[in-house]
Amino acid sequence: MILDLIITFLFSISPLGEGRVGIPYGILEAELDPILTFLVSLGGNLMVFPLFSYVMKLSNKHLWKSRRYKKSAVYLTRKAKRGTQSNIRKYGIWGLMVFVMIPLPVTGAYSGTIAAFVMQMNYKKSFLAVSVGVTIALLITTVASYYAKLGLG
Image (cartoon, rainbow, N blue to C red):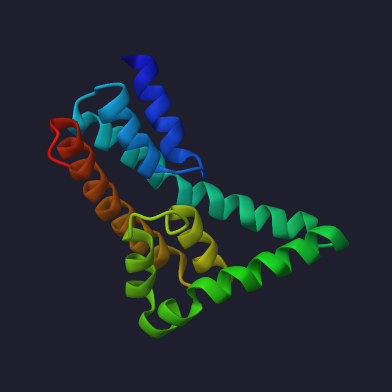
């Protein structure tokens, strides 16, 4: 059980699926309690924003002098802006929250953190928006996984 909780947590903090993979693993594969799975996954997914924000700030501060890094960062920034800018610019923090809460690939905490960083949004408001969005997305994923386990999905 402990190993399954650790795997659920690691899936949830990973950029390769986040809680959208951690919760189905915990509920469907490891057969963990849905509430416990939700809480472990939420804990991991909520850590993404502060940790990834710190890494991005640190990377930009120390690596900006490198031509290769600068070129990659500019490319990723343009790509992130293109994918999120219209809704987030139009609706601000609410747009960021809705973007993160849609439980689809490429709309999670990592993408929301990148969007907030690129658009230089207020850190505390962005953290709140991403946190609420993640919580709603994980609630949806938990309910869907629970009903799938019951055979009602």
